[in-house]
Amino acid sequence: SGKVGYYIQGGPAFVHSEAADDTETELSGKVGLTFAATDSLGVYGELAGITNGEDADGDEIIDWGTKVGVKYSF
Image (cartoon, rainbow, N blue to C red; front, side):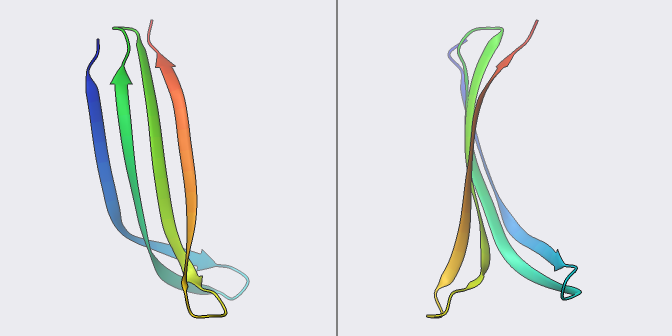
């Protein structure tokens, strides 16, 4: 218990739109952290982002997501 782990992932994401029958290449990435509170209980958190084109001003749009949770092993 008390062990901390982390991960980083990134690269291209191929996003297909059925409405336009088009595939765009975006950039995606995530970082995460895990913590073993006990031998049976773990806690984790993640922050992920993916580009989503540009807005009307030409600035890159990034969609963000988070994930937090616990994992119990028995």
